[in-house]
Image (cartoon, rainbow, N blue to C red; front, side, top):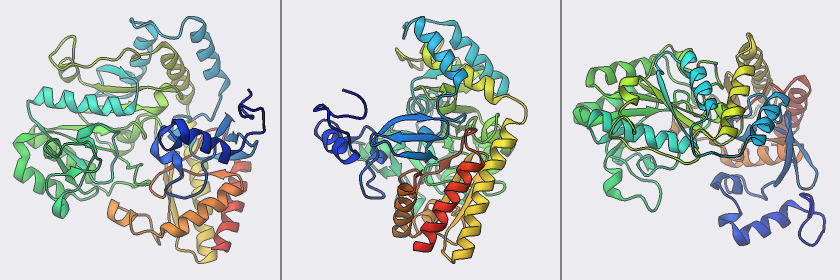
Length: 435
């Protein structure tokens, strides 16, 4: 059976593959957003990807602004990354023992992030965030954590919590299976609202182990921080002896070589990494000062382990990727191209009179069906979702693949160029006129 045919040897279709998948996979997918529930319709089953493009099982080509949710900053199938992976595969798929490439990649990260003296690799961003919370609690001896409504840090129980009553209280579970008693240790504030943070610290400051935040929120669409917001978080955390954790799983090596903290000029106590440092392979990491990191096993009492952590294939892909993106001018060029696309989208919205806008930071972008970019989760939820759905499917039919949700950022890669920008803007022009 080829990837473009089914078990009976017939030509594959997205609808047919989705029907078949639903018989053996929960919802037909392995990550909820892939099911297209937020936009409606049939998910596209991808057969292959190269450069700025993906092809589905029906052979249709798409300009890809998903980029595997961020890690493909070089585009799909960069020859240098593939060569590194192929060489690593020839040496074995997994060891369950130390390998030299773990050290090499960790050295790259430590060099680029001033506060990172030691690194612990994991197999996913979710695992990195979960382990960072445990380490923060173990280091401080405190139990409570503070997060922000709309920020996503993976599926650890403590982080699947939404704002409580009045949005200035203990959180409540946002997923079945999360005990209410556990959620009571999670405080939820509002992104870009320092007052909401201070109120919680006034009430619970001595008990708060850490504040975890996406420095540029990417999981409620792209939300930029208000001027002074992260500086204020840094000051509050320092005052109360609370660890400030930047979740740079999405922004790290995406918005700048030194992550969002380079752009903001704010140094956290710990950083969670993922996505780009694996070059497309499953990977995550925690980095921070030795005084904090050494509280983790085998040196300290905070247990963390994983058979596939530091997997040699992921390490090889990550080293090759970081080598390539460290080229002088890489991020200037990448950010300028993404900004060019965003400017074109805003011009089209103005010409057609549709209440839509876009903005970007580095190679991350956001599209809102609002008159101006949202600054909080509440504003994101006020956008015209039905218009977004229609816009989304117009673009999809025209061969442009955006994230299938109005609350997700999109991603630009070094493989995208003038041709892809022009095609995308033409598709957007047609879609907005139809709206």
